[in-house]
Image (tube, rainbow over all chains, first blue to last red; front, side):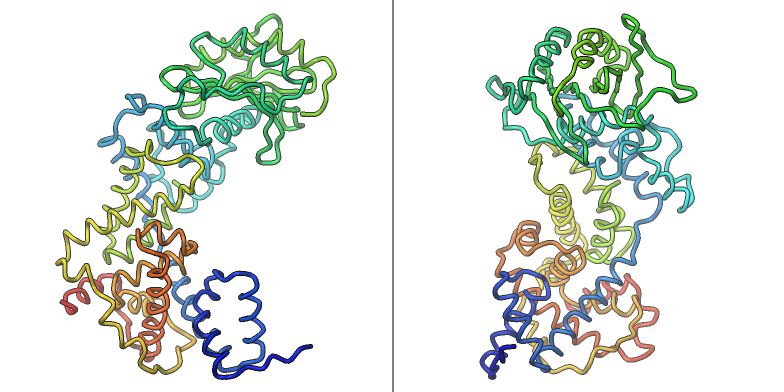
Amino acid sequence: MSVIPFSAGSCEKVRRQLDSYVSGELLVETNHEVLRHLESCRACQAMHDERMSVRNHVRRAVRGEVAPVDLAARVRSRIERDGRSPFSSSGWAMVAVAAAVMMTVGVLSVREWRSSGRALSEMSGSEQASFIEAAFGRVAHFARGGLGDHLHCAMGRKYPSGFPAPGAVKGRQRLNEDWSPLQTIAARFIPSRYTLLLAHRCTAQNRRFVHFTYVEPSRRMLSVVVARRTDAEHFDVPGIVPGLVQAGIPIYSERSGVYSVAAFEGGEYMAWVVSDLPAEENRMVAGNLAPSMREFLSTGRSEI
Amino acid sequence: MPHLNDLYRTAARMVGDRTRADDVIQDVYLQAWKSFDRFEMGTNCRAWLFRILFNSVHHYRRKWFSPRMVKDGEDVLDLAEAPAGPVPERLSDKEILAALDRIPADFRAVVLLADVEEFAYKEVASILDIPIGTVMSRLSRARKLLRRELSEVAPGYGIGVGVTAVSNQEGQRA
């Protein structure tokens, strides 16, 4: 073990760095230097410990303050009262804020934000907690994948300013030969006012999926998502009935907040159409897509 | 609602009063809702909300406190260099919060963002719209001030001093 000679000079140098050290803001090398000095200098170590102690005290005390249980409800009603309608001129932005802001707490909040069901304020603290915990659980399991991908990939993406100006549209990016025909199939059945914005393979939240994002002139978005079906994704659930049967293919749908989700099976895959269209219209899009897509998905493919 | 607790506890410390904090938070989310077109997708949503929060806090503090109090300068803080005794190991949250409320708002803001909310210096600088060097110097002085405040906490001191203490304190500083 090397002995580090420390003089008053090196103590002074280390002490100047102590605050940044405590904040984890030093470069690796400097961090290491400070650490080694602290190991061998009691005086500096004591100063360090004191900073840590103050920081920890403050952190604990401030974090102990919790927002009133009904604040979220008050915020929502304030927005309902003073905010603009979500589908005014900047409708897309409104939906996007809901999506980005809500993603962290799951889909329930999108529903919450928009609907006037039982307010959180009417619930006890523990009810609230379990309500929020169950957020994703309130959406039928089969719908979660596509909805999550739509929020993650279409709504959560950074678009160039002036979007959706011509030129913002990207081609068959990152789709290999096995999967790119899907783009042609989708193009045939998506309403013509929608333009393809992005066609790609994506990985998010441990899911790999093929994702087509479409946008229409008023900037409302529609996603077509395909992923390998998981064991949890099936329609064999009591109480779930198809909203539409197209050419013998049952289309299941679910509504969550402003979003409509329609899903159907194709071979080992599951396909979703997600948009802010009315549920019926969204289901129709899925219904139109289903026969060709299922045929395509039923033949062997490489992994997504 | 994401970040609601983080924003609320920061607001409560910055405006010193729960009712006011409540108002500020409603403003923040309303602002966020209205100005989302100015939010760059892919950037840090939490930092963006905190930026809106501090704009609101600044606005409220101007309204509630005199300008002089809002702009509590760094020159008053030589006291921070004065030697202080050890910080007691057992301190109640109330005592700690009261100590935090006694340090100037500009310094408190940096402590809240860097030490409590764990933002990087760069993010703190962006949220408060100040240079990184200022973030560092304020944080360093704030920690010293806090240390001094906390070391002066004797057993029993500070009991009954809640968040409302801040408005009294602002008054005294004027």
